[in-house]
Length: 535
Image 1 (cartoon, rainbow, N blue to C red):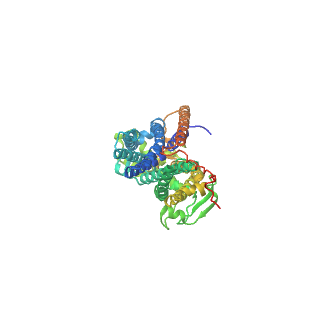
Image 2 (cartoon, rainbow, N blue to C red):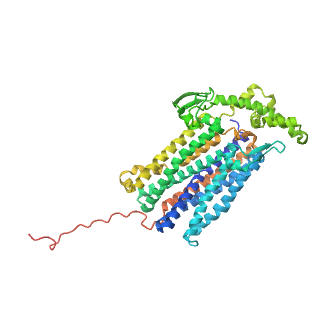
Image 3 (tube, helix red, strand yellow):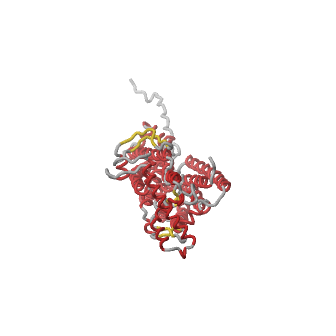
């Protein structure tokens, strides 16, 4: 396969983004759990809760630092690898990123310092306020990133200016309250809560298996299971909202997730298992559950979900309409001051399809002269590979239901006072909790894969194709930076895992013996003459 700048730039950003998101969900979730545990400490005055906050706070700090370090490189990539994207949408995209920077560096970073170094310098309530500021800053930082990403998925509140060749904000309110962005935010944050809960649950289970730090492990398990159970249930509900928004705004993404080639009568069935043939453009086989997909995606019994083939036909019409807008835009660009009203009116009438004309540029230099075959090829380029989308989504969903089951079981045992019974009769469940620690990260990565790969070939949905957004770089330049990022991030990954394992093995200062001491041996009673009853 021939290497090109577009694919290498996509690979580089995907690698750095997916790696960065290894740290984000744990940071988001642990911040809330830390604030909750410290609230209990301030309310009760029991030192065990303070020791819990300090221990889990150490793991939070390791994760937080590496998350910040890996996140910085992503923002620089917008200018380095995606220069035309930055120029095209800088007026819209820059504002959320700037606000996120303020949140991250002036709120999170400041109060993180107070959290770690303020235990002996602040009162209990002041330190608690700093901890909650870290939690709120972390979550609001995610909000602004997801507003920016949500705008790329569903661009609202902005308009294209043909004279400047840039997107310009028309309503910041619409950008801020973009329904796709809001759905992504609550879904992503809830997934972070589940990640932190499963992490805390698994580490606590390991301590119980080893017979160490039992008091702290039991309390951590209780709060993690309750928090995780509520969060796992909310992820399912909020995921349903994301699916509903996808049906409204990204129909091709939804069709590929379901491997739905043909439009079905409403309500559409749900493919539990399927195998798609991209060349024949059909499923080799599929196991279907009637009505389920229609109910989930449309919340009705009579709304039709279009299949891939019908969506491709609609795309062909938009490509032809976009070519008219593209031709008018070329006239305007030659002499903006003297462009006729007729030309501008033609552009305005077809402006919403302008991005589709750019899909033709890999096939022809002039979209107005595109052949039927070229239009067909451009239209089918809007269909992502079905199988990765289909199974990535189902892996994510399967993990989600597993998290509900696990957190629900541990919540039952903790709320009924049976956690000690797990060490005696249900040790297998503790082992499952330990081995399940990586699963939330797998689910999160699958979710981002579905969201971003499913948006291709668009970097901005229906407006700007990915191939039109890259910088003017050579393959060698991108390969060198890609190799550098791989080396750097691999080193950081080793550091992260090493530090985490080190401090987990050390464990919390729990005010008791690190290992539960064995029961004192019972000394045998040796009868003496005085103790033997006389006959």
